[in-house]
Image (cartoon, rainbow, N blue to C red; front, side, top):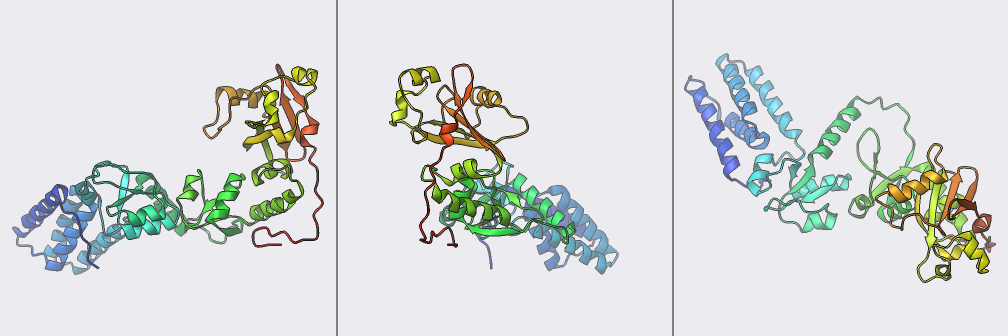
Length: 377
């Protein structure tokens, strides 16, 4: 199918350069067949590098002068291979520059290729003819955009490297079994702390690093079959405890991974009466700390010998970018799950006080009704 290509100054300049190199060879009585010329021009337009074009024309001229037909075919095979190794073999960087996008951070794509790479989990950008790359695009945004598209050059290098690794991989090596999940479940499980992976043909799974990769990504993802089973069991288990507000909290309080969580008082809850007050004030005023006055604002990995003091310092001096609460303060509660035991600690004026009552979850006896969890009962 013919493509409507954008021909501008950059493409015209390359065509003129290529014509000069061919004419120079023909002045030596070397005749290039029409189909070979067409392949040279296509290579020049897509690869867009004068040195590579000059080398190709010179090598072809030498092969023709020596009547080396096999050498000609080998050179043309290399040309076709170089073109096929482009992210989209129908467009090169010259056309991207003629379109108006002059930065070197993107490899160009047309809509069909953009949708294919998006489905495989790559971040795609809708490029503007004004040189703006726009924002990370969803499938709907790609379908609605009438111009060209781009993939970050670093992502393309990663794809090429992974494809090479895949070709050389010992496919008999063990890889953990993975389960396919839909976008909605992927978002829910990502929010709960699960490791979500893109579905690609890479030799190793590609880890999702931010929520937007799922929000604007393809329709299906994958995760460890063992992890999926663990979270579905947690989803069942949390039905017993109405005090648990989310699957993320269930993973913290009922899970077996080393994690920590930060709780802060809900706005407009009765807990505002003792917000930012120390334990002495709370007890002297006959108040009671209640879990329902708090919300879980952050969950992180409890790594190494991380202590309560380390957590306090981090969430005051070097707060994580994804932390949306206020700096860790008096009346906040830090929950530690060391993989075997879960403890709650009230942030007091100068220290922490263990608060066992915070974790006294009232278990609700389930009736014999069947609860649907995902696709199970």
